[in-house]
Length: 313
Image (cartoon, rainbow, N blue to C red; front, side, top):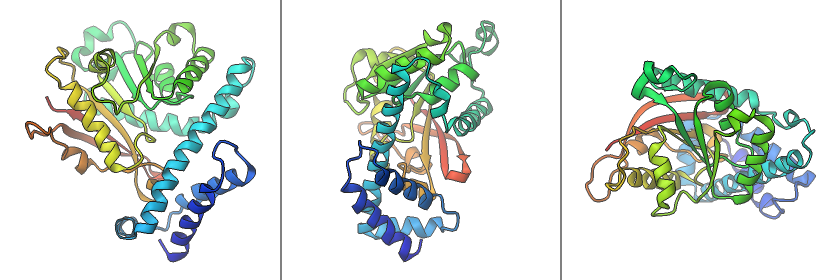
């Protein structure tokens, strides 16, 4: 990263901070488009970038705020789109589904990686007999948002007999996600989409939410969840501690699918490394909480990475 890019990122942060993130003015859209283009540059040395983020406090603060603003921009943009589609049931939702191909590639890669680990999504009634304990019948998706793209694709294309629990802290996002899902999915699949409004950072989590999570063989953590590495690690630590609690009788093995970023895309999405996940420990016993199973560059062109880890009981 050269000095001009550094200075432009700091300036972008200043300019975006002055604008109303909910207005979607032409100026706001142009600035975020510029930010995305900057973060798509191919000629940046990742190690140099990481060193600069570690040592240049002004740049670090600017990038963390840009990440927060980008997450809000994405949320409000999805809410805006979802409202349009929810009001007009004849509206062609696919017009707004511009990133579907990228999501399909991402999810296919994640499904393939699970299968490498001997884990399969339930597709038909005979799977229970053939695959036994390796069969996924329940998935939790933390940070599903107002347009639950990943959940829709997983259910429609990969696991029609899987129940998906979409967890988001925004009630409006869940209400819109339910309306969108009902419009897109056939009735037999829509009944498998569940929506829970919950701040996953809460400690302790409500018993009902903990019980549901304890039954989910796969738990997704969306790329937007957590504003930085520390917060993402805290969320993971909180989740697995509560799932390992003695008062839960479930012996389900949990596969955590953690979406993160590398390179310049860590300016848009919080980065977390597999080493840091593997170092998470229980504060009482000192034992490790996670075993990292696989790390994949899922959308390499964008610097997106998926980490799959299992909880250690």
